[in-house]
Image (cartoon, rainbow, N blue to C red; front, side, top):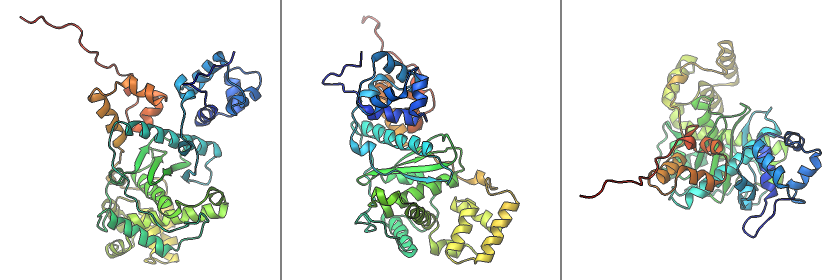
Length: 386
């Protein structure tokens, strides 16, 4: 017997597909895990052609570690559709991208839930005129420099270092989540609805300078590529150019040309190392920016990269300990506000969000096991009044 639908609960086949993908399973994998004789039956559940029997759904819930309510949760097409931008290395797999695409949708789902109770900072990202017709046109790097400076002025920043970019983003209405990455191939991904930007940094083991650059990179995609159509985005040559443009925005935003050029009085590795603590970025990013601004030439750049490789600093640089470890706070604050003010209990929160407790903790930055902690029960017996 299949799972019966009632007017208030309709099985959502796309939720089953999302749940399978976020756990990194193929249709065959999941069918085997739950003991289905054929994966075709599971495909029919995902395509909405048939309903899973109750016993099968129970097994699916167990393997995918998601509550019953998740599979009946209606979502807007804005949550589940649209482009997700990735800052990823070339070897990032399609499976990893699917995992993070679902996680962005879940981040939006959690935020939308909290927004019913709380006032969050409004997004004040401005609109640009790039690619307004949906077709991708390369943006000149000089224009990208101007947009980076314009945003600094818009946010009332000077042209010096940005110490805590995560806090800056949250203050200006950007939702950030830093979660443990399954693989170092994906640094970050982002998606937006209207002017609301959601960013996931997919590997909290990365050094703070890499996280900072990844956040600025995703912001660059929003400002420059917001209107690009999905069919354009999927073209290999277009995607590569868009990545280059987002990288240029990130370096322009974090290291403004005039200020950085004035402070870089020497191009020795020792001097880059000295500036690392002030600008809170990696030496490698400063070398990249120096070449971008023609402070150093091709020969000098090649020499510095060889020197870094010879010293074994490509993966881990010296002085990483001087970099501020950033941490998002608004979603964590949202949970604490609701729980501490008795608006919702912890149990009510995860039941109403309709996700696994561990997934909510990871996306909101709560400590693992937060929802397992016992809540103080209300007092029933009291002293008699004399």
